[in-house]
Length: 258
Image 1 (cartoon, rainbow, N blue to C red):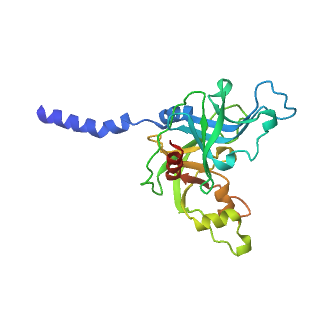
Image 2 (image 1 turned 180 degrees about the vertical axis):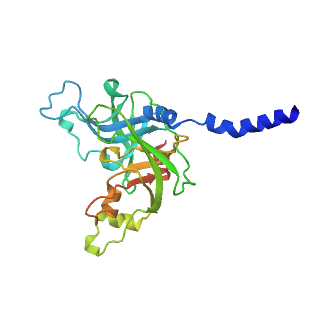
Image 3 (image 1 turned 90 degrees about the vertical axis):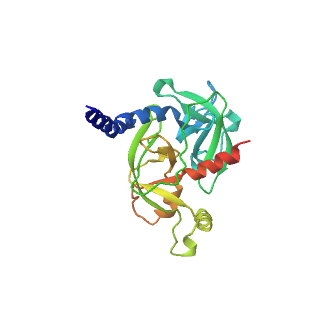
């Protein structure tokens, strides 16, 4: 009887971990409230002619105290219509319940194409950052964002895939005249990025890439500046998704902390 009890207990230990592990659906439900749209907004009832009152330019996610928002630097507009009181904005919530939150730029990292915004209208649920020191090729990942903007309303979309490669960001140009200033900067300051086998679209820029079992952030989707250096020679884009590792997010947050 005692032997049977020990065997039953051992079987429970073998079976329980998968049963207790959160499913991807559970993780997405936990992650989605932290994922926001990033763009611009005008004050309500502001006479702005043909301009759209709200414009979604990319994705971001809440970290820290819930009032910091991480996104790509290239997502931010080059200029704001200050004369008509246009502001940076974060769009939180879902569908018709979406809320516009004015935001300010508090830190930027142009080299790694990251920006840190701050909202003042109350904290959002936050995502936990991974230390990301043990990311390996073949690891499963998921990312959540707004691949087609707000065409259908503010509804986050999740893709999943794996880390297909860890590779330097810059490529060597065939001739010096082919190098842009941005490429030269990255060649002088090389760093690795993650390549995924899942396709991201322009609206996904700034999306959190996370482990599907834990929801911990491994990096930030970038669909623009890496392709400028790695895919400029391709007639057609490869569909590879590039990810800025979370270590640079940690550095940006540390720089912004008082």
